[in-house]
Length: 316
Image 1 (cartoon, rainbow, N blue to C red):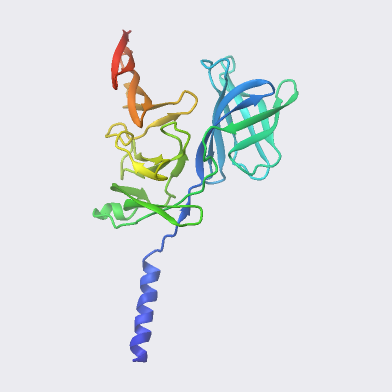
Image 2: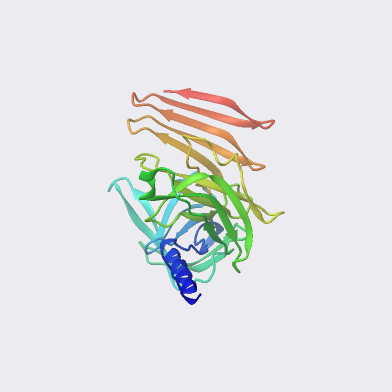
């Protein structure tokens, strides 16, 4: 009997060593939109906080008085206790970006509010800046867990795993919900890309989950958009956001509160479609395309009675 028990324990240990155990992972990356001021000048900004590898931040800001001006670029290292990031503008004479200022925060503790000093790179003058998050839950903490399944295709198994479900947990690692997804793939050697971003501009962060297309050289990944519902405090796989191909990825523009999809075939044929979001539905408001023959088409739309109606068209 003792021998049988020992064999059973040995078998279980071997299974445990072969079958990986995947625990809940924290969703660290997020994009936060801010409103505030540099000295007495109102600004609007967004910052993408990324923690892969060494970590970094990227963003843009505009002066509220000049909403149509080219946004000023922001970049720096991911925040620790001290948080510094620089601003850059493009210098057409030099054909490169130049640093025009620096934001410094002595003690960073939350995403909801950023306060510190802004220094002019040319004059070294220093003024205060204050930024407040637009999102109501900028500091929310979520954990996630995807199921890992064997790929049916033998070639895929060497590099990818399959998943079709994601579990979302709260800050105490208590299960909030389980969301079913289409059969998807992820690269084994890289962490799954998942972030918090407000895609429907309702002031609450949604979940953006990336997935891979095995052995595809162009457009090798897509994204799922899980939209947060404040009334139920859960996320929804919204079909309006999760488009069919070729639009695998939706680009977010927090400054203009628009979304866009782009296509490019590598031969000079490109297009971009811009959307506004109304009641969690995407409506086309602009479209342009250019061809390898340098033909250009621009179309503007207006949302009328729940439909995108063409109001102007220009060709070149």
